[in-house]
Amino acid sequence: MGLSTTRFGVFNPEKPHENRITDIGPRHYWEFFPPVIQRNYGKWLYHEILEPGVLVHVSETGEKVYTVRTGGMRTMTVAFVREICDIADKYCDGYVRFTTRNNIEFLVDSEEKLEALKKDLASRKFYSGSYKFPIGGTGASVTNIVHTQGYVHCHTPATDASSVVKALMDELFDYFQSMTLPAQVRIALACCLNMCGAVHCSDIAMVGIHRKPPAVDTEYVAKLCEVPTVIASCPLGAISPATTPDGKKSVKIREDRCMFCGNCYTMCPALPIADKEGDGIAIVAGGKVSNRISPPKFSKVVVAYLPNHFPRFPEVCQTVKKILETYAKHANKYERLGDWAERIGWERFFELCELPFTYHLLDDYRLAYDTYRTSTQFRFTELAWAVSKAAGGVE
Image: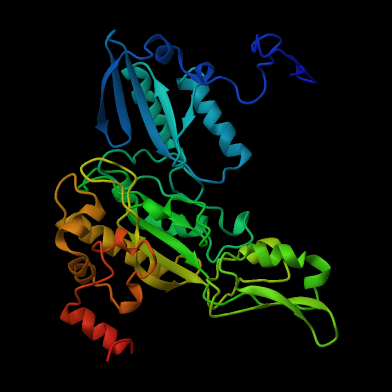
């Protein structure tokens, strides 16, 4: 085998590290650890939550690290990032970290720095009066809501992301800054069915849904799109080639096969799917990633559709808050929302949360045995029967 003579140097398989370039890609994580973390790496004995949003990790050497977790946001201005850096420079020797749920964590090594940092964070507010750096989201609380891009950066959303999350978190803020729930509750939002968020495995989540198939702008399909690519983009094979009466190449869509995912619009801007009246939000619940007490679970659809009523989304906020507070009232300590629903039965879950259940919510896809009752069967209560009959689904 000949040796590589690429611009990265001659590769010798007998000595793979010879002439190796190591500055490609991200810097090594060790460089970003505070000195106290480096000194005690692998020596941590335990950690405790001192109060909502404040943790302490204790090393076998006796050293401690205090973490202050504050809620962040998916999209930040440059000025806001600079303010984060200023706080880190002032109290944390320039070290700061972000969690996967967009939290900002400041780490200090003494109680004196901890108290000064907390006082400083509590004093910083936006001009509207809300906290810039709200402390919380640890333990048995509502954690920071992770969400997708919404209208700001994405072209296929069925709802917005940041505005929904802001409206909902205003309603649930007390649960973020306290630890009064039976267990942690993770809430997420995905603004379309492509779900670049963790909604399929969150305790409560919102999913933006389209309810109408894409429109076909025959005037521009051939001008803007590669027809074979558009046809291949549909996961259900609902798109096929077509020709307009005047001989232009176009496509046609079988509406009975379309699941309104928007993949075709990603490939072809002449197939717009956004619809102001038809688009909305579905609520799913009961999922989790944790393997604690019970295995991980997928979320289940519990509300099929709620309208996009900008800017405060009252129906969505009221529904999510109702589910959360019902769970808080009835669940056992340490019991996640999905575990509670399975313990009492999903039928009872719908009744307690005052959510209508119709046969449309029954899973009939090939993995249905992963959902409601390891079966496609749902034991209808009298209330569920009444709702289904009123909806015209059951005689």
